[in-house]
Image 1: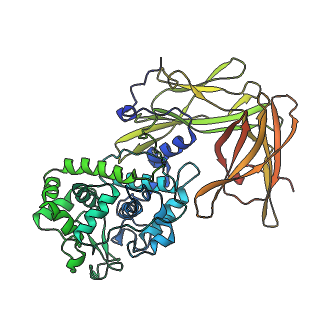
Image 2: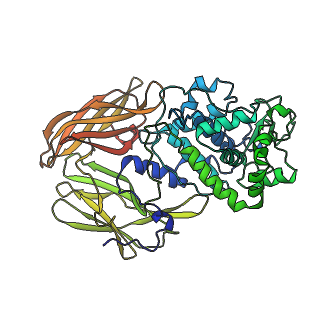
Image 3: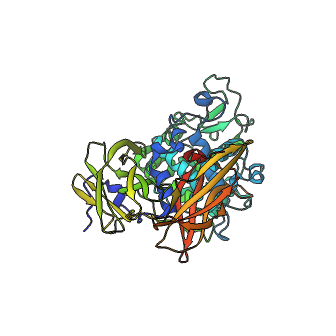
Length: 518
């Protein structure tokens, strides 16, 4: 019987974890929880950083831009028709050109998150994860995150409220989005614990500030504009607020004043009186905002970190086909340091069981330092091709972790051959691709996959079919091959075997392969 070791944090059992491997969930879980290993968290460390001109002295912050972008993306949602919502349609130029979507924050945010989206992580999911990481790492509450958003193929209908709109219009707009009047007050207050109003975008609301520490003249919603706290409420209730949408020069655009006061200040007073209430309310409302998706889109369960997660598995068949080079690493959630004995045990095709001691690699943190995880890895191991590898498990200080008894399966039916090589000829990249397929399976198709973008910039893949060659002399693997001149940053493998698509997400760049003799 599988027993969770004592190092596993309670967060991992708050919701049922998925079974590894699952390519989409593995990718989303990694971006959500492996925060020291992705580039998103670095963009909100420090929290007053801004990627464009001015940096920490701009008066703007990435966190504020991301939250605003996510709301504007969601705000097109129509609860009656089920259209709009979180689908990255805000990144279409047509939406950004509307009066309801002013400023360059959407364009800048698009550049950040379209670049890190993959075939398994939609642009909308990447943006949603970015919002969660920004809030959690800048003093905010932990937010339950679900994945599975689908990127739009075209702009959505208009529907974002504007500061000059009357209160009744705001109430109606938020109701269309699925929020009550009280929830409208809460969501606006939660969003406005970060950021402010930029003078260049709203010159009738904000004057030029002539501040060298605020070079883009941003009038902030509260005095701690890069930190999550309830100051947006305490300063409003105490009458000391400088929120430009409460005490702005142009009362027509003082939308926060109208929204906050629409229930006699009851909601804002409750937030001012209880930082915990504000935090828990915001955690719920932010999650609901991010989970507002078009009808037909099925989000995942809340994604919690796997207690034990293998990663970065690499398999390569030697040129002579006799051996396999194998390496992997494993993340142990909740382990605060690498001072532990971790063994990798694996089964093979001939009934053998082998083991090796793993080396401590590094320690990761997540959710603003709430959690830690330790990484361990192998050196490159040489396996006999006939034996190969079928399944792994891990021993952590004597406790076996085997995913409830099923182990961690390793697919060695498909891998790169070390014969693969690339050459640079007359400024062109020419590749000789060799892929090994285990002779115990009979694929109907073997191909390589090149990540690319479709005509509206959504992640997709281009496939190049390979041709079967003669089996290797030891009879364990058959080689499939092709020549390519396609330009690519990374390349992966895929095959159709017994009606099932097998894909290896071990993406390689051409620099990972040998150079062809020319």
